[in-house]
Amino acid sequence: MTSTGIGTIFDSAATQYAEVSPLLWDRIGEATVMTAGVRAGERVLDVCCGAGSSALPAAKAAGPQGHVDAVDLAGELLAHGRRRAAAEGLQNVRFVQADATTWEDHPYDVVQCVHGVYFLPDMDASASRLTGLLGPGGRLVITAWARGAMEGFGRLFAEAVSRVRETPTAPPASKQAVSRIDTEEDLGAWLAALGLAQVTVTRAPLRIPLDVALAWQVALGSGFRGMLTGLGESAVEQVRTTFAHLLGEREMAELDATSLIGTGTRS
Picture (cartoon, rainbow, N blue to C red):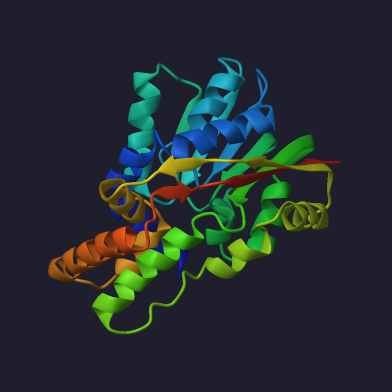
């Protein structure tokens, strides 16, 4: 899928993305910034920033003397991030609709990407380029799903879509990239291969009680929404009811959203 296609999917997901943020995205973003150790006065680039779940905590940590550039393709999510920043009185964060793979501004003390690196074209080349935007001693911070996290949920949603389409639903294009960095060992080795030093990987457990309403919000407010592309309103409603039935049938009452937060320093 093209970068434009990803931006379109997340634009359409903006309402539900914002609704689930307090339970899901904000908690992961805050854990990322805490692990990154963003300090007062630092310059931060937040790639695939969405509605600001990691950019806003970074702006708070960087303080008035610091600055955060928050970059994403989804204009609707960026607009939500700007509203959140204004409501919290944060003037040191800038939300920009741009392609992170062509972003030129540098150097940064921290470049962070929370659950977005696998949506970038050529994950290795994109991450290498982001590393090049760091100043000496700067930190690259990548947050990825831990192995097993979101997988059961994703399989159930894909099954619901397949039943309505009456054809197998292909896994998201990002799945292969996700699976390459979904253990502490693999994420650490991948960061080291980028030439980073002092690599550490921290597990951030997150399990959320799940009911039918929240499950549908998560599906619509995440990359899973892309599975619905091309379906009309009635077909989407059929997916919703089928998904609800499967959740009950399989007794899925919890969402495993455990993340891995990898950091490495540019020498």
